[in-house]
Length: 192
Image (cartoon, rainbow, N blue to C red; front, side, top):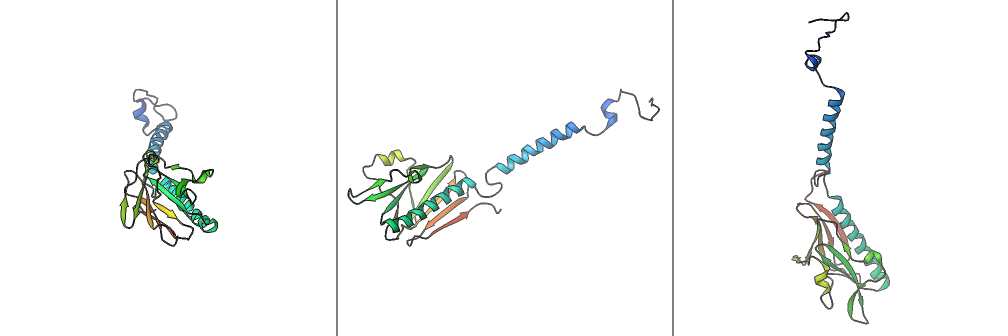
């Protein structure tokens, strides 16, 4: 094998095999591919713990119910919460018409649809309540009645409301007690 004055082989027949190792470009490609796979695993649902979207929806509901509980006491007004498996809306009781009416002019209390693949479950008196999928079915009724009542007396219909993602075991359970106390618990998610 011919060598140069510096002692390095100049024979190109052996090409890359004689050099050994990898180029910087090859290493960067491998590191990038590994990074993409790790990113996909981290972003997959449940891989890093709780479902943030489900948690946000549960926190939003908790905040709205607490706000309406306080408003019901201050304004002597009764509110109701009507749920479907894919969303919810709030009502106020009209004592002149003697029926529940949607709260008009308050964007915070408008009908709210959950993000894709999130769903609600409701338990009243220890029994699962079958929720309609959409409000269209409920809107056909003459006078829909909310499942959860937030009364001006300070009382709240005792309930357990689950916010979960379709196809997962994890859920956020929002519990309301008769005296208006609310508690939010995370269940079924991997430890952080």
